[in-house]
Structure formats: C-alpha cells, structure tokens
Image 1 (spheres, rainbow, N blue to C red):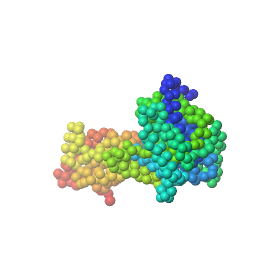
Image 2: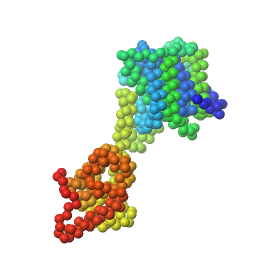
Image 3: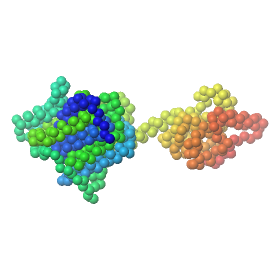
Image 4: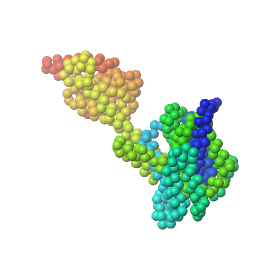
Length: 553
C-alpha cells in the first residue's frame, strides 16, 4: 500500500510548482532534441514525474526527460525515422527492465560505478548536446549525431541566420545572468524562454515549433517487428541502465541536501513504472533530474507530493496552453539546451582532476572520448572494466606488501625466540587477508625471492585469510612445489575450514603431508625449531641432512 506523507504539504506544493516551471522549457527542448516533438517531451515529463514520485524511493526527487536519455532517443530516432511507435516501445521496454532491476535488487550495484566513469560519461553527454545544438543556433536543422554536427559546422558558418544566432545567444545570456533574487519568482530558464519567444515575434524570420497537439494523449501500443526488434531492445537496455544511473546519482544529491537516505531498488521500480507509462502515452523516457530536484528542495519540497504537483502543473499547461507554445523558436530552445549541456559537464572535477590520481584523469578522458565519438554503452562498459583492472592492481600491490617475511615483525616473545633459535633457517609468511587473483600471480615469486637458499623450513600462515579463490590456491601450489623441488620443508598453519576445503578440492594438499598442517603459527614454529635442531645435531656428527627429498624441476 502506498503511503503519502502530508506533513510538509505547503512546502511540497511550493517546491512542486517551482520545479514544474523550471521543467517546462526543458521538457519542450528535450522533446524537440529527441526528434519526437515538444509534446512528447511534455508527456514524458508528466508520466515519469508523477509515477516516479508516487512509487519511487526518493521522496524529494523530481524526474523527467534528461540529457543522457534524450541523446539515446535521438540516435534511435535517426535509425527508425518514420515509426515513432518503435521508439515508444523502447521506452516501455526500458521501464519494464528498470522494474525488473528494482525487484532483483540491482540498485545497490549500479551505485558501484566509479566516479571518473560517471563524470566522463556525463561530461561526454554534455558535449554531445552542445555540439548538436550549435548548428541550430546558426539557423539549420540539428544533425543526428556528433560527427555529422562537427562536419556540418563549416557549411553552417558560411550560411548563418543572424536572427537565430542572436536569439540563441541572448537566451544563453539571460539564462546565465538572470539575477538570483528574481529567480525566486521566475526561474532563469523560464525567463529566457519567455523573453526569447517575445523577441522572436518582433524580429520574425526564425523557425518556430509550429502546431503542438493539445489535450489528453492517445495511447500507443507496443510494436514488435523482426527487422528492428534487436535495435529497439538494445536501445531499451541502454535507456534502462542510463536512467538508473542518472536517477540514483540524483538520489544521492537529494540525500545530501535533505539528510535522508533513499531506497535504491524502490526508486528503480518507480522510475520503471514512470517510463513504461510514458511510452504508453507517447512520451519520451526520463530519469531523476538533478537541477529540478535541487530547485524543488531549495524551495521547500521534501516529500513525494512535490514531484506529483510538478507533473500535474505540466499536465495543466498541456491541456490549456499548447497553442501558445507553438510560437517558441527552435533557437531559443537550442540556447536552453546548450546551457543544460554545459551544466551536465562535470566542471568541478575537471578543474581539480590534475591534482588527483593521474589514472582517474586518463580514465575520465577515455570515457568522454568514447561517449562522444563511439557509443554510450561501450563508453561505460570500457570505463568500468579499466577501473576494475586498475583497482585490482592496486589491491594486489597492497596484498603483496602485507605478505611479510616475519622474523623482523613477530611481536610474541616465544615465537621470536624460536626463530632466533633456528638461526635464519625458518621463514614465516603471513597472508594478511584474502588474496585476490591480481596478487596471486606474484605470490610465488615474492616468496621465492625472500627465501633464496638460506631457509630450510617455510611456514605459510593463513590465520587471517577468510576465503581463497582458485588463483590464490594455485599460487600456494606453486610455493609448495618449489619448496619440495629445492629440498625445503613446507608447513601451513591457521587454515580455516573454507580455505582448507579449497586447497583440498584442487589437490594442493597433495604437495604437503598431514603432519605439516598446524592449528597455530606457534605450533608450526615449535615443530620447525625441533626439525632444525635435529638437523644441526646430525650435521655436527657428519651425517647427511635432507629435510625433503629433492624433486626434479
């Protein structure tokens, strides 16, 4: 049962109305940028905004069309021109996938994407939005992709429409320079939209949106055709994943501002219901919108009512003011989109990135380049893989550093005395924690270098190793084989049942006897000291000493 919090009703209504006013020009602009028209942007903002607020897990969040989602939709529109039903089918499927992600508990995992990858992806999206709108500012139709946009710039420059350029630049200036004190009453983007549209009526000779449908939307049934289903499904998966990441990042922003904690999986379900319904009524996909959420919270919104009020305000506008929106120039919306793209770029990290880890900066640059010039999903995938590899390498180095040659580090007086008694012929290696596959490859070499020819007994202490994977087990096997081949005795101590079962299951225990297994390191040291003492006694009598029969290498 859905429970609606009414404890902050006045603040939620105020925040929702303000967020709705801010969302109006963005919904129109993103609808145009998607290729499906301004009304699709409005329907998307209404559906996702209302149902994500009602069913989601971040009460103060405002949802609607966002830059990353629009970029994917624009690419899909370019591939499926003439059949919007297929695009809306992708939106419905994306919603269904998000619902499934929420029920499967994947929300907690999406937040594990490294920050440089997210930063690079969002910055790349911002660059794409700006590059696609630069041509529109010059008075020409928006190209379908970034490479075409860059290639069309010379031709556009040679045939600039000065009126559209002036309107677009003027819109940008108003949006950026609108006084904050005035913004309490009229947000800067809305002021830019109104002033730019009014100016275009005086100037004339600029492309405008034209007729916009009004009234309630017509229902769209999903369409599945063999020729395009793969493309639609791929776009749906991308929309679902990007929308999930975008929404949960905004949820974190809302948490920081409201000192609350969102429910990631519930949020995915809410976003999924909103997107599924958006496609059903001919709206574009959406996600949690950071700027609109910020405005909502700053003006008093805290509960889910604020997001629902924001959507209902947009619905009222669609039902009554659609004819007025038809006079909005493309250049004005392009100016608003350029600002939206610039706001998406992670300037705060870019300014400080050179002071942080160099690899993170390189990773961000790679993700930006792949986002802009290759593919959105590949950019995130490659970024996550590279970040994971770098992390494993760093962890492996830490683990190897903790693999201590113990004689200099034993704090227990009895253990230290036993080592002194062995005169350097016993070496203890303490695995300070679980061994990753990244460290396993170098463990054998590390032990071999420490032991050299002086030590006769090796003690591997697993007391602090809670689990072990196949790579680590094979590394232990390498150490055991090397020890036997060089005539050294191998002891193991502190084996947990889980670690022992892995070593036994993979046959590693075949390389040492049951008598070489000890419960504690102290027991292993006592046995090793006795063995060394007996060997020394035999050596004094002139007898041949061999702890282990050497094996051929």
